[in-house]
Image (cartoon, rainbow, N blue to C red; front, side):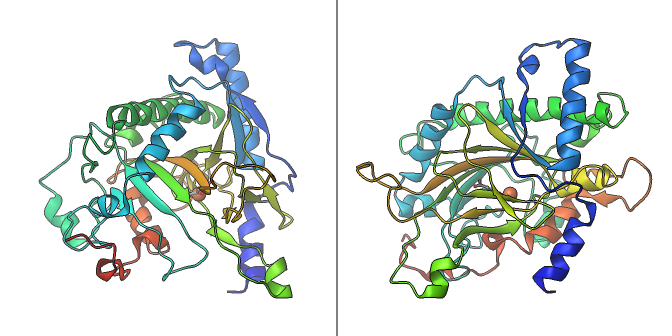
Length: 363
Ligand SMILES: O=C(O)CCC(=O)C(=O)O
Ligand SMILES: [Fe+2]
């Protein structure tokens, strides 16, 4: 399909041509029992942003950790030598490893030069992993409900803290989901059953700087990406990003709107599933990430340029959860099936990536 045809399909449900992303102050959610007035106001505000931009900045966050702490943890992980990170690699990158869904994925320059990123993914640290259905899951190759895999406590000292961050992000996302239920005219707990054995993923991401060689005229105007345009699959995504910049969000006019870091904020966006459940009231907005520039942007900046770090938290239902649009119109989907279909398009889940034969293979 041409980009024009694809774009016209994509924008059909999109209502506005925004030029900046709205900012929503969620500080009332720091209270265990926010006032009714605050709940109503926040649910209206969230409805408005998710029905228009599909993306917003959230400030006034209720977490026990701040921006610096979550990025320190992330940088500690990526500083682990590649050979040790490869011991945590998913099966498709290291065939002798059993983990298929959780763990590390390396940069894959041989697969796609516009998706240059390495990542480490964890799921619910205290999930009750069902062993009875593992046969079925093994036959489907990717085990969505597998346990987490970790570096040694010597190589990575922040496992417990990262697990706490996961739990806090899940709790916060659950509060947002209650507000969305209210905004759709439902009771606050309308979607609660989705969260049984939730597959939510906390993903640490590192995009290295991309070298730009001598460039032809067309290359100078070409946009270099490190994450290709996509929508997220789940309910919603909470994104911590550093100050490198590069995230861009597509508006209804076809313009890519930059979404740089605002101090103290995270970014929230609606995923495919929530857009579908809302009967198209909410929009899952296309986004992409520009490749980090090869040199520090400010002259005289002697700090080493590591590229971009970001930490999306993908808030997702359980694998077996049957999700039905609230209007009763449109088909129900089993979340695990929805995610497996979508996975076929993710570079980090391409089978036989060729990595297992590379020089990074440990012995
Ligand atoms: O790194 C970012 O800012 C965005 C990452 C993203 O969109 C994703 O992993 O789905
Ligand atoms: Fe995304």
